[in-house]
Image 1 (cartoon, rainbow, N blue to C red):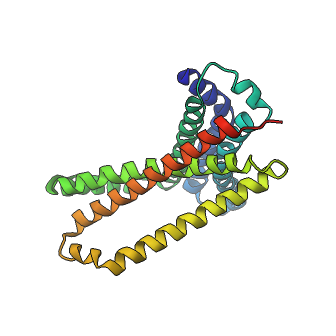
Image 2 (cartoon, rainbow, N blue to C red):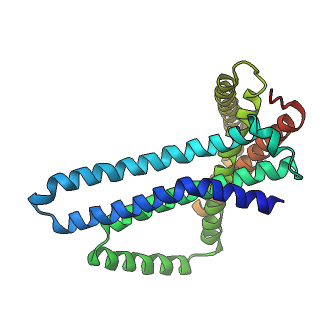
Image 3 (cartoon, rainbow, N blue to C red):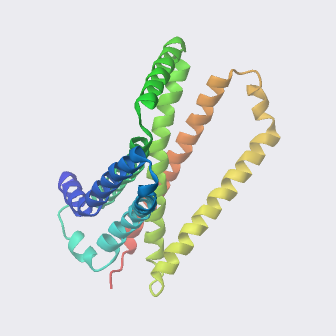
Length: 261
């Protein structure tokens, strides 16, 4: 059933994002043409098209955030929830489908925005420089030990788990805000900022305690790469713990405290 939910969620959101991505690509090509002409006769059209291009990137960022919030809230915490929760599937599948598709569009929005900038900047000289830089980087990585490769893997993992934690934090905030019957939106915003405040307090207290205990002095003679890998591992574990807390908070509210009236 999770596969069906993913398919449904992907189809519902693709109608929003695919036209935006296509428009972004077209505006990148238009601006690239104007930049290649580079004469006074196209200054005004180029300024207009560049403004439109930047506006599209901003719109993609904003819409990605809005859709991430709206799909969860509308489907599960409003009247649509009556239909969604009658489906023969678990709450786990509902949360997972929303989160995975939201992660997909968040990554695509960032990657395609970066690619569109590359399209604008690319030329034969830049291609040659990028080729040299790539060869240099691969040669450096080949000379390094397993520590560097492990660090790169951890950074990639960190991108995924931090994004998952951020999305689940919004889900948990909306679920907790749903408990405030008459002011659910305000409750969700309050829950989000309260969770953020608790996170900051816990991190500050934890770092202060660790610094005062002299624990960090044990790593004074460590090489930078193992130390960085340890820091990456700590961040990943922290994001994973937060993800689990936010996930089960959301699941608990949806399973035991949901009131769609």
